Length: 447
Image (cartoon, rainbow, N blue to C red; front, side):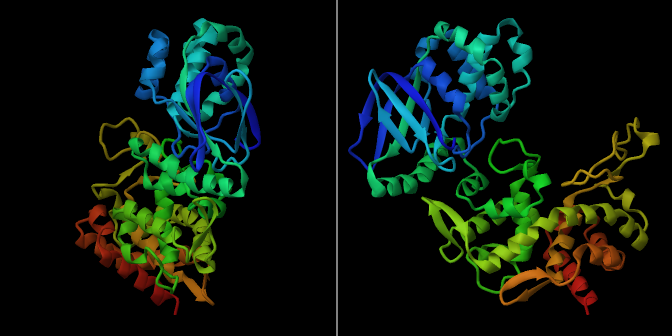
């Protein structure tokens, strides 16, 4: 909500300016909620709002007992760079910094209110139109399409919304205190929603370097915060980031809490360790309140290599079955492996897929579908293809070429570990010996 300005009118309100932050509490009119929805986004909210039981219940209240909505709902919390009092309980709200200002809490309330208003504006065809809205990000375009009709029906809507606005005291010190407090306020208000470690880290800027490093084709497909709908989980990327981070020679914060098998068996532990790393003053510095920017050159160089990992994961996933079969025929007979055969697409045999599978990141069509536990030890071994010069991590060889040239020979060693694990990808992925075996094999082939 960068550089946005609009007017809120309260039915009743209370202004508090005694403390480090100024705060207005009250019940906002329907007209004010419409103006908020005209400019709103949820960038400042740690969680993404999506349609579900919560929004359904809110809409039911707005439809059946709108007079009680202000008592049933905790409402919406807004952070604004400035809030100027006008006459008749009106306030001019200005958003200056989209990173920390906007909707801090109440995204599901705002989504439900928007759907309720749209339903009234669209009329009989509303179910067909609104059925396609599953998440907040799908609302604004439809909202703008029916904005004229919304104006026509707003006088028929009679609910009030609990609304809080926090904004800085005057002066530089007031602004500094505001920036310092906003992220903590957002976290505290969202604790009831069981905010994930990834969501908190994303809001604090810990993942900005990953976002900047990753292929732009994938950025919008990553679930950076809870419920935002990405098919790729950010914790998968954070876990893989520990492969190059393990080559940083310093004793990094969080490194002692990380173990090599965690990239498969405990991605939550990888996230916690990464958060501890990024919140350290040795590694990052505060820019806006609690939002931090990575400044450690070695760590930055390691995470920059992450841009290659989705492509390398998919490559290994594609090559793995044939490499295994050349080492020991029978990959398709492993219990956890399924495969695509167009002549048996309608078979009831669970070994056969009804449609071709795809690789995890770039969705390349392939033949076999099998668990990541077989692949992760090879992903860990990529660390052996890196070099450290003056504290900076980089590739010592072309990793894609190395994999294509050596995976068959590596599999002659690795398939024995799979056999000893009784072909169980869980055991393979959770056994440190698997990781050390492949890493040592990669290392030997560099000589």
